[in-house]
Amino acid sequence: MSPLVNLRGAAMAVLLWLGTSVGVLANQPAPGADVQSLLQLARQGNPEYASMRHEASAASERIEPAGAFPDPRLRMELQDITMGGEQTASLWPSRVGSTRYTLMQDLPWFGKRGLQRDMAAWQAEGAQGRALGTWADVAAGIKVSHAQLYLAYQNERLTREILDLMGRLERVAQVRYAGGLAAQADAIRAQVELTNLNNELIALDNDKRMLQSRLNMLVARPADAPLAEPAQLRALPPPAALAGLPERARARNPRLFTDEALVQAAEKGRELSWKNRYPDFSFGIAPIQSRNRIKDWELMVEINIPLQQSSRRAQEREAQAMLEAARARKQATANQVLAELDENLSALEAARRTQVLITGSLLAQAELTFKAALAGYESGKLDFATLLDAQRQIRQAKQQLIKAQVEAQTRLAAIERLVGEEL
Image (cartoon, rainbow, N blue to C red; front, side):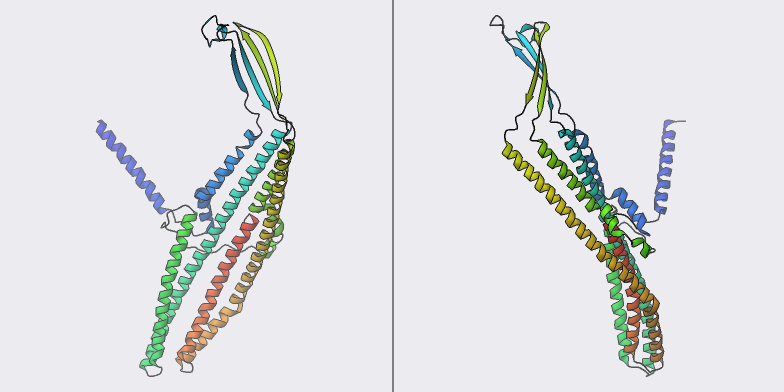
């Protein structure tokens, strides 16, 4: 078989494989039917979250160097390189008067390396907390945008239902006008209502496009990438699952976690500033070479004298002030988190009660009112304006129900962001 035939066969195999792969990708459903599919994409590809994860990884790599000994130093000194003027200058150790090799190692005061390592470890914990906080913000944004997209789709579906209903009402008004049973204004008002509904559909389509672009941005997809229509909203947790949330927020809120890590790092920094009152050491050993052999050995110890005590006291006061600032910042964050949590819990309960009220009574009442108004208009007992008001009431009731559902999802996302975990 010729090489050309082999090449053609290989090319056909590659094309078939590519075609199969593209077909498989094309058959995959677009994400967005539920929140979890979007959260999975964001966890893998959101660049902001990836950036914070890498920063946290970089911070964790600083722990070991922070507690390591400084690198030793080696120094070589050539003495009498001209041998008292008897030769030209030489840089060869065996041809000079003597050569001293000094190996030196700096040693910080006892406990300093441990404090530096602990401080770096707590700073790494703070970086990890910031990464968790970034993910909590991204996840909350996805949950809220997904719920808003659900609202846009449901409002569009409701508007089309009302549009169909208004079309039937407009035909009824035309028939009654043709029969001399109603004024022409009834048909005109129905046509105006139809125009307003079509205008709302345009605005809802724009809302959907903007929300889809926002979701695609959060999950690191092209802005115009297709998204599936949200099938349903997440189930709300039972009231019993909301008990003890303040304690869970104190323990798991990413911002509080970060602030606590910064407090611990500031405490280690204060202790390190106290340790700076004591000197650091340098030890050295120096063999001395004369000609071709080592004749003498020297030992050396060196300490820095902490003479500038006023500057060290200023550093200690600075460290203490930074610690107090970190503690105050943590307390302020705790107050804010608990206040936001209480606010969102109250709003979630209000949205839940609103849903119960609408589904239990308001929606049924609006439907009965509309049916009665339609029958009254057809029999000539009510005017068209009363029928339009009844139609608007049933539409408003359905819209309020959808808005209450989305409001509950928005508050649930905020609560989960504050608590630091899904409920």
